[in-house]
Image 1: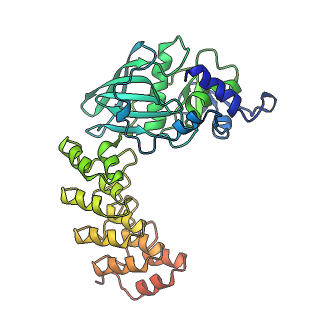
Image 2: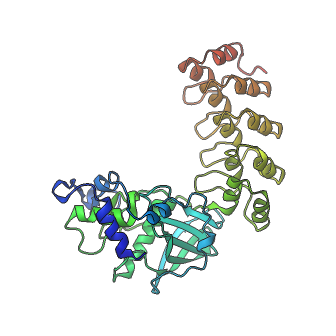
Length: 383
């Protein structure tokens, strides 16, 4: 389906307010925003307008990416043959593994982004078609996009608009940062039209927009994928887990959500994938970007069996996250008496202090009587 039909569908089926009742689109001058250029605040449109389509293919396509690892898009050529030189740079965590950079989960998400074989594949979600392929090279802890094949902005004669669009997608979709969407030259006189244009091309990930390119430093946040290893773990596919490990994906690699494969394995109904990773050498106390261990996550999920399995493999029952909270804090606050007893049985400190709270005080705040009674009988440092 061509782009012009998508735009017509957008205008016809999705516009829920007429121009006479158009919302006010605030204009923020350069001195009053973090990006140093004049921007529109397009959120009154992009965060309130719903995406619908009378074409069932578009609706089906838009929400079809949940379990898609992107390998089916490898080798697809963009419909536009132009090539654009660029030098966009982003930090990485030693390795950028093949996998998903952004998976659309709703109609208001307009793009899927994948990294495979030194390319970033940009897929228009409503179409399930590759619109651009960005070629990258690794420079130590930096990844550089040096060429874009195709276009991300239809009907534009300005190739640099596609460069800005790709930078916007990486920052807002893959890195989950707030950043101005690019507007074509001359679109800074009509805020409502600009907001509709952003909604059509970028959906609800566009919060601000500008015709001017911000002076942007390399983001501090590292670029990560939902690696093929993570996706195999989510599927419980042991054969693929082994294949990706043998292919060099680090077993404790953090995904875009800040979690290691063992953390992801906890979402499975059975502990098979988790136990397989641990047997393969995964760290039982691997930390997420927020400092959470698998044991903390197992407790948070109220999974007694997985918590017991992790403890049996040596998990630290007194580990603290970046805020100082332990597994015991989590179990007590949720009123999970069996988990509290399990942790105590294996040497957990009953009264660790984090941000002014102990497990007992958290249980008292929720009136979890059984936990209160159990912890009330224990003294600090008692075994």
